[in-house]
Amino acid sequence: MGERPFEIEGAGAAQKFLERQGLSKVKSTIVWDGIAMHPLAIASFKQPEIALVSAGAGADVVGSDLEKIPESAKAAVVNAFPRLDFKHAFVKTCAGVVRQFPRGASRSFMRDIGERNVEQFHPTNICDLIEGAPFKE
Image 1 (cartoon, rainbow, N blue to C red):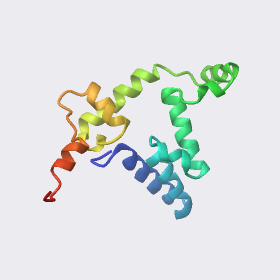
Image 2 (cartoon, helix red, strand yellow):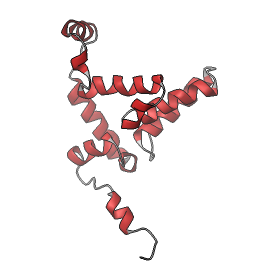
Image 3 (cartoon, helix red, strand yellow):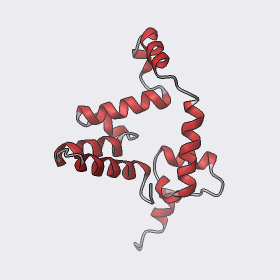
Image 4 (cartoon, one colour):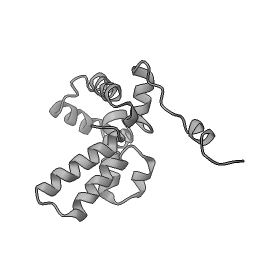
């Protein structure tokens, strides 16, 4: 992790790893896009691989679109892959990342987690940036 947004750091790490394993730049860029865009609404309008990463992460974390999946299928997945207190562990882990790299939580779900779970986390708001823009009005 680092000072760039969580998704960008993860996308870069995945891309480097895959290219070291011999994956082409074209395919590793699709992976980069999928990871970097997964929490953004725009991901669902991109190519299928990117939309699928976003839909999968959304389903796993917040339950997006799960009403379209039969209860028996959901039960089978959770039986095969127990959640193991995922909700609590996910928020706790993300809050730890925000504590260590507060600048990396500027504009995504990581910001929301930081605002609710990390004392002294006060990210810059877009209104602050607009107000501080170096333009005379």
